[in-house]
Image 1 (cartoon, one colour):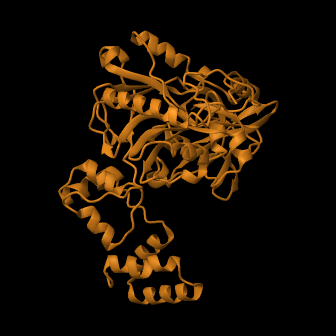
Image 2: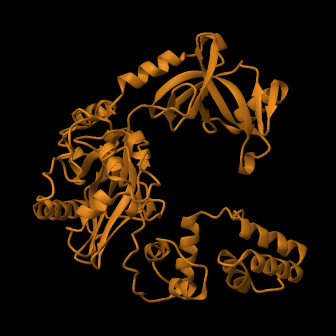
Image 3: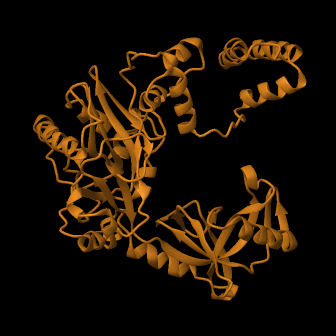
Length: 460
């Protein structure tokens, strides 16, 4: 490369963000002249954000850890909260010994796997801490140096979006990090759609906070009094969390009266929120795996996704690690829908039509209700691709309308009303379950069926 890569980034790429248009054009022209055609291609990929290396974050973290001679968990923590592509950051990442951690930085999140075996194969139920699987967004609540920060799992700082949580969290002791879930909550979960109305909004108005109240449901204590507790056993962290929450509720109780997270009955919209916006997730008292299964079956009525199984003796890991944390989710809802449109996929499927639009019958009309692009094998995708190419009715940019002849069973997690969709509803996390070659398009489900499912599971 004509210019060293670090120099290209530090001296040419990063300064463009703050340059006047004329200066940016001059810088760009100068860079073009100094780079070869292939180097220009790389520069433009970096400039436009289109450089997709395809290396998993965990693999990169392990490689950096091995190079620096530190534990993978240490490197994962150093990478949290965002990094700058400069020399100082690289030196901090590569430091062999311990480095002073940024007080604002969260810990890497520990993630669960979907349960892959019969629960009885996990051993005695007493070896497991069993909690609800809340339908929100994963977050860490950090209180250090007198400052409160809320980090999403995507490493976004979302403190300003949830001032009711951050304000009450000021009563937490310094050196505290809680792992948990942000939920729309008023004496029970209000549903993910209510949370969505608050996502991405900085400094929400009092009305927005009142109409869509948010709570942080804490279920793990990662740091207490500035001490990292992640290597401690789950049952010990839980015990300390309960003690901390008891003290916290006394400190913050003057603001509002706390309500236990097990209060999952619905209350009228007009009721004033009478619970703290920081709650403690309930540990379920189950005597055997049959009782746990009943809790899973009851999840949709309670507005949750299932249960979490956490081995009581487990430490808090980094990323996904099999064996200690499992999520046992309720069975998804399903509908049989007709494919009405398709477009090309992404990555290795960029040359195949793998992104599909599905519709249900509303009288004599097919009305779009969902889009999905996962759930089929490569062979099945190739088969549908051939159908799309041979049965295209119209083209709308990258989208092809196709003959409504193929029926698919679509699985999804929930339904919510939506003014943006002609159908009036939207389904959450749709994916293709299977193709229904045994069904004619006329046998697909109706919009009325879908709305009936929505009414049955409605909680907001």
